[in-house]
Image (tube, rainbow, N blue to C red; front, side):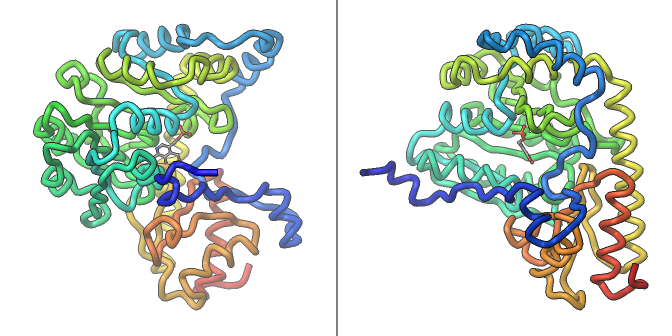
Length: 368
Ligand SMILES: Cc1ncc(COP(=O)(O)O)c(C=O)c1O
């Protein structure tokens, strides 16, 4: 058997085992998952009802063009219907962008640390890659721009950035997009954009009218609580959309995913409530970390990156120590951030439990 040699530079994504298995392994009676930046609650109640109503139609293939979702998003955003492409999560769209834009030897620029999938996209396509280090935990647009050359086909900006939760200012981002050459595609990965409460954030979709080489990616996985259904969208001018439509499989977004996404868009007040919840809890967790003297990166997303070095437990072992107490977080050591840990902002009680166990591990509070 001869495999594609590009696979030698790739590792399969290592997902955590099912929560029940972890609980059985450590003899836990509860386990809270604050590891994957999911929302603490599932779909909006109206979405669950719509899903049940849609079950009877599952003998049919989905709408290959996601037309109802396309119309709903166009109405909500004011962007023409022809400017959308849908994916099995925005992760699929990232992979499709790799297929559509990168040939072996082409150049690709992305920030690091950032979403771990970016590296795999380039490696699979045998692209030459520049992973540009963050500057003070923020995506370094100046160095990214300087890294772009004649062979650069794609540059990704993750905003807010995962795992730091930082954003770039709209002014700097706009200037960056304007400076990138027209034959390099700028991908704005906005998986966490709905959580941004910073008044300085700006809607980037209107910028699409001026830039043929811009693609904005968003997802229903995070604030809408639909990670398990897999649906995300890309927004760009029709030329780029047509390229992705050529490389995607026809029925890449399931019927249930489309139904759930359409219904989700009908409840902006629920989205606002979730945004407020995350902002309040994020501030509360940050204040508790301040009180513990634990350094963290101020975040605009639904997670916080915190410094776990210098605690009585070695930094590398903190995620494991938390797991054994029933709290699953994500180790920075596995994400190019040694010395750090990323915790998702969950429900109030979940955040309390995390803080309680962190306090215990840090040796700074009374044993709960
Ligand atoms: C920055 C970023 N982009 C994209 C994704 C992919 O999200 P999905 O494929 O669920 O839409 C994630 C998921 O965690 C992410 O963190």
